[in-house]
Image (tube, rainbow, N blue to C red; front, side, top):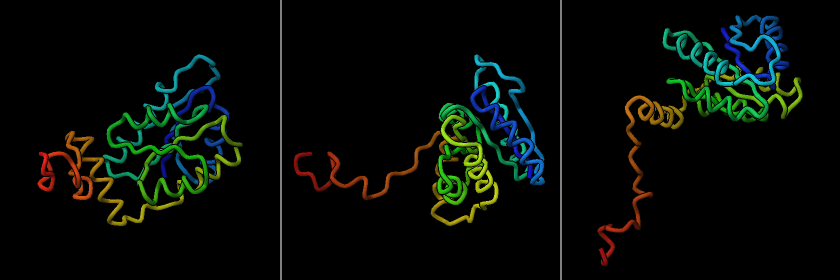
Length: 175
């Protein structure tokens, strides 16, 4: 599998570790940087490129995934999610790593380099890469709602349960 990596200075140590670990595990890695420590670098520069790489390859039918890394992982996840076709999840445990794939078909994960040990984060990434999306109908339906909103700007219809008791409802005699 091809895995795209991007980080900022706070994620550089983990990114460099992952580069070698992923290659040793048989993955093809695309490193979008940074390549040297710079305390003033900006995570969008590298994380947007990693997400763009994943999105472009998935549009071509490839099963590429991505990992973006920062101090907390929050900004990096936000950056990745700005790229059309990307579903990036912030992962902070083994369970969130697997659920990102099983429930959300996430194609990029974000981890906080200052939040966990290198060993913990490596395990999160290992689980993310190994977990398939099972395609349960309810998850596919939800992902499709997000995709329609992303491409067409159409909000999903409200369910009947969300419409009960609203002002102007047929059962509201004061309306």
